[in-house]
Image 1 (cartoon, rainbow, N blue to C red):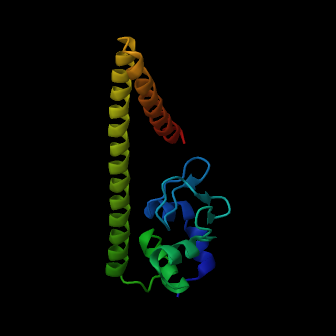
Image 2 (tube, one colour):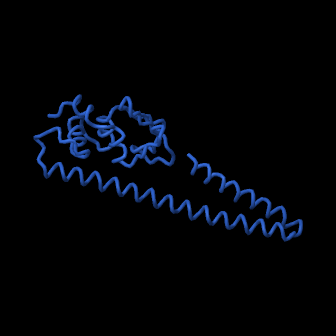
Image 3 (cartoon, rainbow, N blue to C red):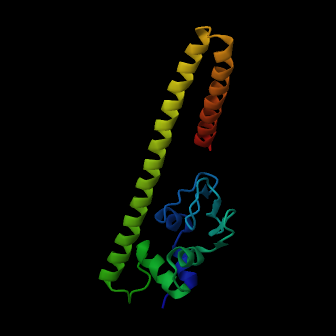
Length: 173
C-alpha cells in the first residue's frame, strides 16, 4: 500500500487537475473537473496542494480530487494517482496496470481537450456571424430607413452588440 504522505510529496495537484481536463490559469482558477462547468469555478492552490470549487463546494487534497473524480476509495485513488501521473512509488503495481491506467487517463484528458476546442470553435463561429450581422444592421441604419423600420433596426443592433460584448468578456477571462 502506498504511503499517502510520500504520494502527496511526489505528486502535484495541478498535474492531476490537468489530466482531468482542468487547465488552471496563472491564478490557479479552472473549470471544475467534478461537474459540468461553463466558467472557471475551481481554485487549485499549487503551494498548499489543495483544491476548492466555488460552484459545487468540493474541496480537499490530491487524493480527495482523485476519489471524487474517479469514484474510488482513498487507497484506490492513491494507486490511480501513482499510475496516472507515472510516479512509480508503489513497486507492487504491475507495469501493465501502470501503463493501462496512464493511457486511460491520457485518453480522457485528450477527449476533454477536444470537446473544449469544439466549444471554442462554435463560439468563434457565432462571434463571426454576429459581427457580420452587426455590420449589415449598421449599413441598413446608414441607408436612412423609414422611421417605422429604424426603431426595429436599433433594437436588433442593440441585441447583437450585447451578445458580441458577452462573448468578448468571456474571452478575456
